[in-house]
Length: 182
Ligand code: AMP
Image (tube, rainbow, N blue to C red; front, side, top):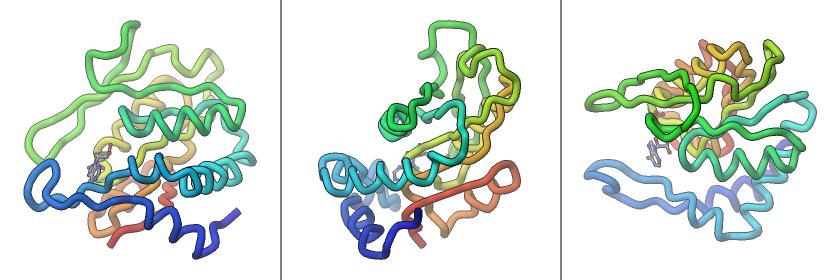
């Protein structure tokens, strides 16, 4: 089910822009004002449920930390398990990890080695609030695939289309973003 332009606008208008956070030149897309707006949050979650109910997914994987909010709610709505993909050093059991480039330096995310169960090729949706350069999501999709599961799509509430993150990620998996910012 596609969103009407009015519905998309309600979601878009609920996201607040914070200029120069966390540093000068960045416009931070603040989704806390989407989450505390019951109409926008409900519309968004209903749309995600409508889109993914026919995907025959096995798991939803959320990226640390805002991907947990949308991912855990969606997993519950779809009757699926939820898997957190976390920043390095947070998960207690055996993990596999993947490094990715930041503007300055590198970061690393991890997933539990057995997070997607024993079935090979379990179908996984990766979700986060926003895609910028795509480095984080690319590493997340790589991790999912390395466990023996399959990342069938990456979903974002916001896609920054002035960067080439979406294009690069599309070389690896399908990409869906609800609000595109150019
Ligand atoms: P990237 O790996 O460059 O695609 O960055 C994506 C990650 O950084 C996501 O987990 C986002 O939550 C966060 N992020 C990057 N840029 C922004 C931004 N302008 N506003 C809010 N979050 C951002």
